[in-house]
Each structure stands twice: as structure tokens, then as C-alpha cells.
Length: 180
Image (tube, rainbow, N blue to C red; front, side):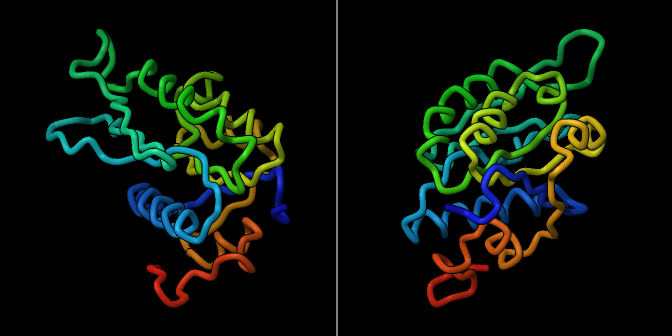
């Protein structure tokens, strides 16, 4: 069992894309090493002229992609986030959390602050004692801190993240065949 079971670590980076790419890369490496990784990473939508960063959630275990942006935002907002897409992605991965070695949840953001979106996956991971890696939207840091006061902040460093998860003896980033 991981040394930080039931704990949450937030990977902090000035650019969320950097953190997301690192989490996706680590999850892929850990899976190739035989670890069970449950969760979702985020990919950008690639659409021009969008103020909202909502894009695509990718299921780490299956590769299934979930669109989480609306073509047109609801009246009165510029946010294109599709809550039903996030809920569908959450439902797709939640049953794999109990059997995983580590959980990667793309972000604690607007929906999670309202106990929606990926919130049930965060709860499931905490209940099963799995180490959880995530990022947190800047404007929801206070809500996240109240939700998970024990959370650890980690720099976007593969070795530090792997060590925090307690996976250092199983997988060493930068080893032969590893991409950092």
C-alpha cells in the first residue's frame, strides 16, 4: 500500500497544461510498469476564441475521451463547461478507484467546489485510502483547502510526485525506458 494512502497532492504549475501533461505521462509510465491507475486527465479543446479552458477528459485506463465543453455557453456566462460531460467521465471511472494503486483526477474546479463533477471520485478515493493526484483551479483554492486541509503541494517534478505516491520502489522516473 502507498505510504500516503488517503492523502491528496496538488501538482502546482504556473501553466495547468504542464501539470496535466506530466500527470498523463506519469500515469502512462505507471501503467506500463504494471500499476493500476484510475482517473482522468485533461486535454485542451483546441478551439480558438474561447475564454473557457474546458476541453476533453481522458480516461487513463481505457483512453475513452469525454467532451466537457459546450458549443455555446449558457446565457449570462462565457463558461463553456459541460457539467454532464464531467459527470459522465466521473461515472466511467469511479468503480475502478477501489482496485487502483493511485488515482489521478484532473482538477478540483468549479463543479467540484459545488460538490458536482468529479467530486464523487474524490470522495471515493478518500474512502478507499488511495493516494490522489490533482490540480486545483486558482479561484477554487480556498474551497479546496477547506475540503482537503491535509493536501500536499507538489512541484511538477516526476520523481517528487512518484515518491509522494509511495511508488518509488515500484517505478523510478528516469529509469531505462522511462520518459520524464
